[in-house]
Image (tube, one colour):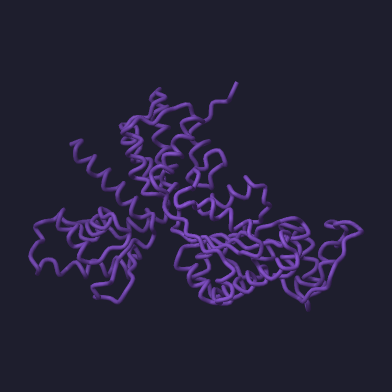
Length: 413
């Protein structure tokens, strides 16, 4: 008899999804394009998209599903430290530590014969032929991966490097490594490993701009927000595993507030299904979603909650910074010019129609951008082409959830 799962076993906003909860990414043939890039010899891969759209889950799923061995490294450390971590996952940390101690003048590179035969712990057999390589941690990593049958070095969350003092050097080193991995494919064919790098659009664009040759050898694929049919796939898979059903209105509300991010789908479905099961029902109703809103908001990403609370005024009949955030959240486009923000603001606060009273808006937006980091812009300040967006793309859905909860409370009294 199949074990009855709990909502937290199925809906997992805090980690990449399991294979049986993965929503097929076929919008604009995304999944097919990534698979083709993984198959093409010498082609490196850069996946770029907003935080929370499922880049990590996509790579993990494809590698597991196609039995492609991969090593995932979270970006943030120096280039040498990241590749040392990758090597440690292949040949063991003790071997690397020994090499560094015994061959300080050569670094990790040394020779692969030494790397693989320290204490006999990682020996590949007496017939293995080794070649001498220049002292390069990238070369050592590439050859270690090839000999161990690991095809993908997955560098995740490249944007984490942006604030680091070693960002520029690390970015250049990564680009050079991608180029050298492409070159190795001519010698080793399908055995040559490749780099898959994931990050937000701006960081990925900056990386590619560093070297034209690398750009030509790299598939640059955008991972967009999920369209509603793919968001619904997550709910369908959850229904099958939990033996529940999301009723029409509850389903529509979850899809709407997910805003294209699977992170939110898992979060909203987790708490809504919990609420229904606690009420003794296998069907999730709209009222379950509404009842779970406090728990949902409390469980949202801490960074979102802290940033929002810091920016919102604690008093005033009209909390202007909060109202501007709500005005932006009510718009469909991710990037909007000032005039659209003003129009949306006036829809909720028509008493501010006069030009004199509207002048304050620019002084409200400035601290939201410069002091609180809620907003970012593109273009020249005060230019009609300048557009504003939420710095964290997950913030729009969070503000919408807060707005919905406050309206809900108003109707209760």
